[in-house]
Length: 281
Length: 275
Image (cartoon, rainbow over all chains, first blue to last red; front, side, top):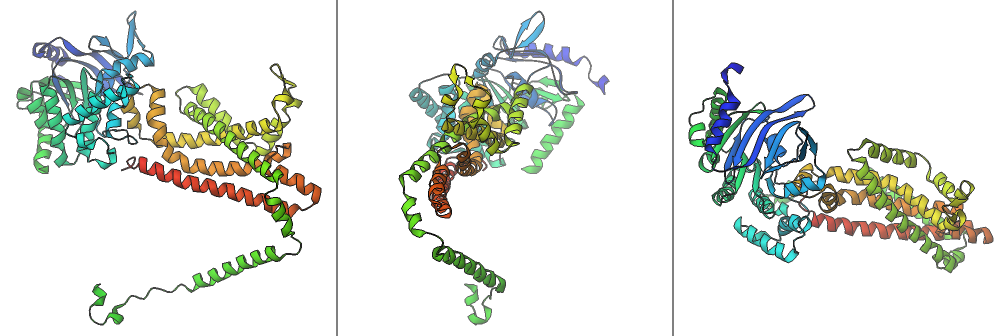
């Protein structure tokens, strides 16, 4: 099996460098992550340019979500480096070793990295507008009136300005996820991480969320999207990376990767996912 | 509606009879009536004395002290209990163990013993810092401290249960937005934990209201202390216990009503938590 992936990391990094439209906003270098004795990320190298939209695909358990959570240090890493916007995330390097940063420093770094979760994770005790302004007001000390004004504009952008006073439970899953996107945008992030943003949605609600994400991509937001929506990856993303067993097996532009996967596992995964989609629609 | 079709009477549903329900209801009512009648007409109970002492200044003074004791102890209990709960959930082993040790010690010993210990602390330490122990630790202060520290041990468990009932995703979301642990706890986790915390906390408070009566052993000046002072002078023991009972029931009833409204409000605000 091993023999069927010749010189994979070097070749792929090289390809990524050619594809890169700009200096990388995100640079992941030889990252390893273990849970106990179980290594879930096995030395990943990945660059994402400013304005680039990257889809991370792969079966569940392949390490996609864990990798995403390492990028804003929700998960600690065991080795390697992750840079976002030129800053080493979560650590300070001294003498070749990594020392974890103080909490307030990590919080500062996270401010510029938005994240959207599979299960929305809206603050259940706050209404929609309060969800959106919570972090700007409490973390950035933005004046409340100004935060509300910006928050309303963001809600308008995701088509939910009429729901500002509603509580999360009164919204559909699709509406909740759009609020979650507005909430993340309220911190003016340089990078947006999406962790299977449509996986918990009823099929008829998927499109409204993808439309918001598409709009965001068109506006030039840098995005890393863990997704099973192959159509979204094909239509919106600049590059697709396929993860398997804690490594990136194959990556490239969607027109190439999704149509002509070189790796056998990628092919098997794609045919399975696309088959599911056809069967369910 | 459909039953109206055809011969209505023939299609009617006849519920099963429950003869034993009738029997037990009659028995229970009879027992209650007998109890009320025997207390109300017992010639050995001086009903005039009850009426006389129900609103006596000494009793009302004791009632005030009981309310003060319960409220102050509850404040200590909630604040310290929350700190202990957060410690219990901390990644630090030392904090976890010391919080566990605190609960083990204060839940594992009788409250009456703790009250006696605090009330007699002067026997152990004559001075606390520059102060005379007996001057600082008056019976009232000793009572508040004993009740509050004990309450904290129980409240820490209640708050801990509330915190772990909140979806971990809420914490991830708060962190991802750049909120510190403390900020997330205060703004996101604890407000949602309240829904789970309030019912057992109200239960605790009702226990506490009644537990204040234990401070009569160190002359805490509470309702029971006052009732006992009076009854030891006039020997109307039962009458004064009935006077105190009435007031304890008033306090716990008020608490229960407050709990009802508080829970209703939290339910409305938190309608979304487990949708």
